[in-house]
Length: 204
Image 1 (tube, rainbow, N blue to C red):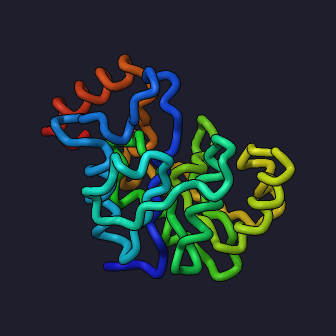
Image 2: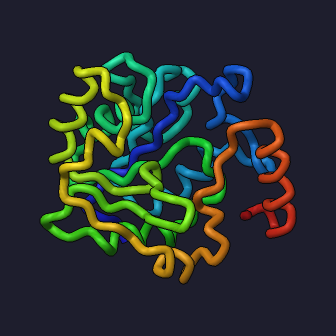
């Protein structure tokens, strides 16, 4: 089922903890993380956007490739860019370094969208997950205002929008171990991801 929502993958990070390497291109279980995410997104969205400052790395991907409108390096600039190009009222965002994002978790977030909601975000015991969340295009203006003011924290930029939280219990119904939120920032975490994939037939 395709949702009236764009799917956006943020692949514009510097990968500073990974020696500057583009984490989206790392392989887990023999499959690039970006390809794992595209597989999930393609089943859910009729519009897929990759926000990156290295567009040549993604020319083979079946997606709209766009660069950050503002050049400040932050997730907020990526969210702003994704919303700017999104053709739907909402966009679901994922970081490019989450190899085990489950389609069912994305669907759980989407199922919580109400017409008055601006940000639909998972909330777990460890905190919020702003890069596994759905944003209304109404977030575009406050995001831009904060970027122009050099205030780049997502939670500050969007604290006044209408927020709906997705509870941990709802997320664990389809992802008991919350592996959807596991991200690869270091070689050690890549090794952990490989072990997790191997233990689960390559899927995590």
